[in-house]
Image (cartoon, rainbow, N blue to C red; front, side, top):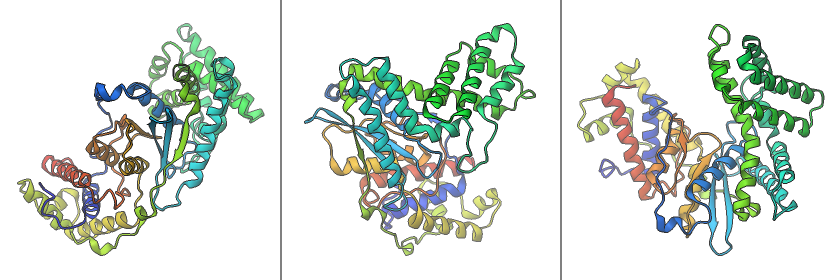
Length: 432
C-alpha cells in the first residue's frame, strides 16, 4: 500500500496530495454522470422511497437550495428515513471554512422549505391544482433572487449583467420567423410579454407567470433544434448555450413544484418533511499547525514515482510545466499550508461525517449538491462507497479539505491512494 510508509497524519497527507495534483492540472477528469448501482434488494425494501424516487427528490431539493449565486453558498442535500417515526428527514449542509460560515443561509433554506411543505396542509388528502399553485408560489418566493440571476435580469455575484434571456429570444425570433417555427415564435412572444409585465410590477406573482411561460417554451417540440440551427455568425455559441440551459433551468422551478406534488400523492410523508441543518462540531475547524507539512515538491514526486515504478523526477516535470524546482516547491508548500489553514469542508463531506458519526439504521443513499460535485468530493464519495452522487464536473478545487475526524479514519487512507493513483496517471500519461 502506497500510504503505509507515510508517518504524516492522513489529513495532512491528503492536503499534500491535493496540492500536488492541483499543481499538475486543475481538471483531472472530464465531467461525467456516475453509474447508478442498484441497492441490495433486502435493504431497498425497508425504505419508504425507491432509490430512484430518493434520487429525484434529493436532486430537486438540491436544485432549489441554490437561492443566490454566491459561490460560497453551495449546499448539499441527503434524505434520512427514520424507522421509528416513519418520517423523512432532509439533511442540509453548506460549504464551510469556519464554524459559523453560511448559518444564515441554512436558516433561510429551512424556513423556505418549510413554507413550501406547509402548502400541502391546505388539502392533505387531495393534491389539486390549487395546492400545486401554492407550492409553486412558495418556490418562487424562496428562489426569486436566483431566478432573476438565471434570467440575467440582475447583476451576478462576480459579473456584470449580460444579455438577458428576453433579448436573446428576440434575436432568435428575428432569425427564425418562418412557418415551421410558429410555436417557438408564439411562446417566445409570451415570455417577452410576461417579462415586460414583471418589469412594470416586480411582484412574486408576475415572476411566477414569467417562469410558467418559460416552462411552456421549454416544452416546445423542436426547441433545441431551433436554437442549434442558429449559426455562429448569427449568435455566438455561448449565447446559444445559455439560451438552451437558461430556459431549461428556469423551467425546473415549475417542474419542481409539480414533482413534489405528484410524489406527495404517492407518499404522504413528503407533506411532512423535516428539515435538519447539519453543522460539523467545532473540532472539525481546528487550525492545523503548518509545521505538520514536511514534504517538498521534489520529495512528493520522488516518493510517488518510486512507489509506482516510474522514471520521473522533479526536474523533468518542471520542464514540462515550464517552471523550475524552486518555484514549484514554493508553490506546492504554499498551497498545502493554505489547504490546512483556510480550505473549506464541502457540504457533501459534512453530510458523510454526520452519517458516519451517527450510524443510522437506514443510511441516506443519495447525496446531491446545488451544483455538480467537484473532483475531490466525487472521488471521496466513491471511496466511501455508501452514497450515490449523480454527476461531477471534474474540476479540482484546491481550497478543499477533510475534517481531522475523517482525516484519521481508514477511509482517508483509501482516499489518499486514489489521489496518488490520479497523480501517477497524470505523470505517466503526461496529460499535464
